[in-house]
Structure formats: C-alpha cells, structure tokens
Length: 149
Length: 122
Image (cartoon, rainbow over all chains, first blue to last red; front, side):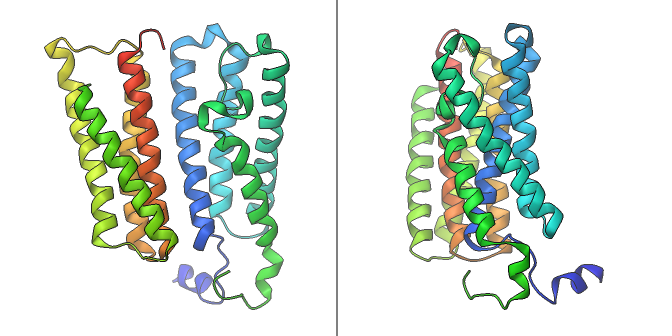
C-alpha cells in the first residue's frame, strides 16, 4: 500500500533509461573492487597496508555510490554527489601519485595509474556519474518530465 | 581450468556481449535471443565452476591464488541472473544493453580467472 502511494504521483527514482546502465556498471565495479579487496586483505594485508586499506575504502564507496544512485530523494542525491566526488578525487590523486612516485604504491589499488587495472573505468565512471547527476537534480522532477529523459 | 573450454566461454561471452550491446543501442527490448545468450553465459559459468572443482582431482591445479579465483568466479556467477532479472522487470532497450555489459564483464572476469589459474605468482 505505502509503496504504491509513493510510486504513483511521480517516478522519483533515477532508476530509468540510461541511468540504469550507469547503476549496473557501478554495481559491477563495486562487486569487483569488494571481491579483490577481500582477497588482498584476507591473504596479504601485511604486505601493503596502505594500498589495501585504500582498496577496501574505495570498494565501500563504490557500494555506497551504487546505493545512492538507486535511492530517490534529496539526501540520496547528496550522498551520490559526495561518493562520486570522492571517487573522482581518489582516482585523480592516487592515479597521479602512483605515476609520479611509484614507490608509494608498489601494490595495485583500484585507482593506481588512473584505474588501469580496471580498464580505466574508475576514471571514466565518476565523470559520467556527475554528468548524470547534474541532469537529474531532484528539484527538476517537480517540472513535468521530458519524455525519454 | 580447461584451456579450450575457457577459450570457448570467453568467445561466447564477448560475442554475446557485443551482440546485446549493439541490439540494445539499436532500440531492441530484451528478446529470447539476448536473454538466451545471457543464460548461456551463465550456464557455461556453472560448468566452469564444476570444472574448477573437479580439475585439481585430475592433477590440474591452479598456480595462483585459489581464493582470488573463486571470488572472481562467484562474482561472475551473480551477474547474469541479476541482469536477466532486471531485463524481465523493466523491458526496454537499456535492459538489453545491460545484458551485453554484464556478458562483457563476465568475459573480463574469465580472462582474469584464466590468468590466476595458469600464470604462476600473479
């Protein structure tokens, strides 16, 4: 009952159209990063504590971002911005550091060399995510929706 | 892992993924073809799981981390059902693209699994 009432007036979710593709790619990346981070921490955490802690942090942020993109409403929207912004910052800072001073990150993190180990998806995805978020601000939904938007 | 089987699986996942992405971008909703391809990718993953469990008994052991191998394999196994479920819930072109993206992700994971199994010390 309550679900119906929420759904009926307007589709307040971002889970439509090409946005769903974005969410799926985020989900896959979150899954891959979590799995890899789990293996790193379970088997060789003492070899590179900083790198593997970063991997775990990145994995959690990817999960949060995926959930935030699925969720509707202003607070999820803000969380999506925060998590995606954090990823953008992470991939740029760690990516640059790993090139400038490879000794800092002898072991791979998801963000090393701008996400090379993940086909550069960690670099491209936050840009697409932010573009998507600017196009789908929660306030815009009070205006009648553009078909196919 | 059995090399020819892994190669076959990789080929089907890539070809099926590209097919789904192209059909999806051209506006097709999920069909028996694209759903079938995704189901086939899942089926082959299940066979791969059986192979991975049985192969060490025949002396075909992983040279890399077995834990990492199974994390990839189980992650890969989760993807096609999730995408297929989504395609059943919301039938539009993007669901077809998602089927394709998932097949391609599975292909990347199979490639990594092959590396872990065969390349010493990866």
